Length: 156
Image (tube, helix red, strand yellow):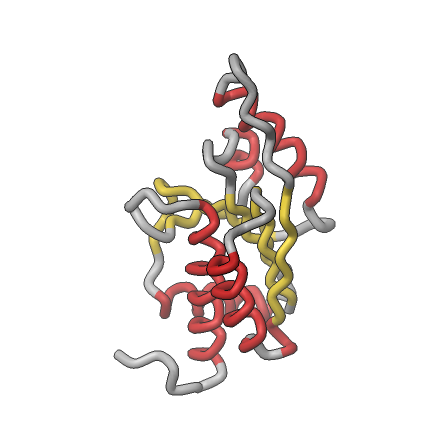
């Protein structure tokens, strides 16, 4: 299984890149992480949030792999425990589903991406920088896969 992360944003600060890479390199080869960065729309004077979201949504939807299980990260999405996330991953592995996690840009995700999604996932009800969300998601995917592998990384 390949776990893809589509994230609006590029040229992240070094600490974001280092945090993401730390967890990406820990992933086993049968659950490898792949990060696809989507160029954010430029914030021009007079550009509405809705227009920016729509342009970024077009880039996101055109970058999707064929027939993914689309999981959009949204602050209003369902919040899972790490055990629940590992249960979803186990089910997707059994069903040979290829999940693709989408992280929006600074203005969030357009409604068209949310509507196309199979699952809206909330990682926190706190407002987080979108760059930090990729680190948090990578860590939680690593932890969820570790649980499935019987690794003592997760402690209850």
